[in-house]
Length: 134
Image (cartoon, rainbow, N blue to C red; front, side, top):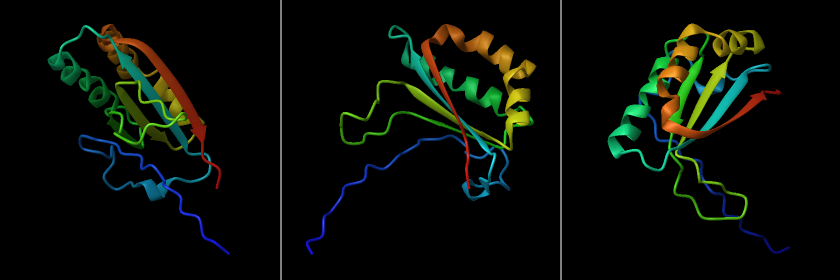
């Protein structure tokens, strides 16, 4: 039997200090964990300094007590393929213990104030929430 070789494109995330809680890790994902993935498309006319300032948005969100982990990054330089969309500028990945915790996050004053403060930077936001099945 002839063996086939497959090329798997890695997912790379460039992050600032990664875990909201250093005692937590990716291995702590369990059934009902919510993974909140948000892609941001920033305005084309903003400066490089504005792009750097925008990450302050993520650092504000890190302060919300129901956040289990928080990471953010930019598109990885993976191989171009029809299924890959690297058109966004930043991705935010936040995990929550359960639906109750993400519900608190969604309406938390820190979250709402951060949106108000930073929304002038973006033109589009796409959210994909996933419930872990184990």
